[in-house]
Image 1: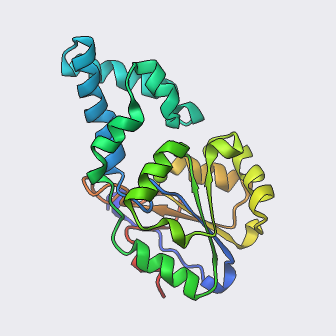
Image 2 (image 1 turned 90 degrees about the vertical axis):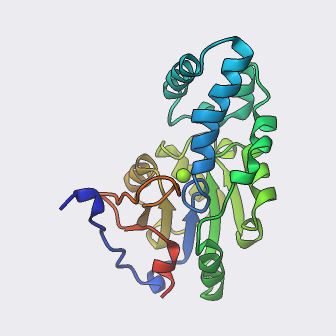
Length: 226
Ligand SMILES: [Mg+2]
């Protein structure tokens, strides 16, 4: 059996959990927007403004992205606006029709409220990205708190992030669940000692479902409405 098609089942009971921390991009929202924006749309605009071929622009940009991967700089729209000489927030708004909430997300958020859980949105996304996404979707009012990594000063891939978040939100880590589509983020939360971890196996509508080999996964959140 292909290991990435094998799903480790989430076996926890909701009675063991008080607080749920949810990632935004890929977890609640379709990551296709972000992939398309950075890998196709920005290179296209960058090629045009710099007289490069599409392929040259794409290659140059992907290399620059990789150099700041898993850091707060990667998500900083002001950094990229300056680096690339483009108005990145304005470009995001031009393709914001691609910002979509994954199926069953609203049902899941309503369910968590109904069973009395505290639910926080915890994202590496820059405040300007967050603003665009909350304006385009109806997810915002479902959270007790919304925290951007820039407020914490670390990216979620860094274990220090979780210590600082705990001080800010006052959760009991042994009774807290984190759901995220980035394996590196789950690893850092695991090092910190987060009680429950859940991988989201279908971050983008355009990519096949890929189950984590290390953590319990769901493809859709209706799997957890029980
Ligand atoms: Mg994500």
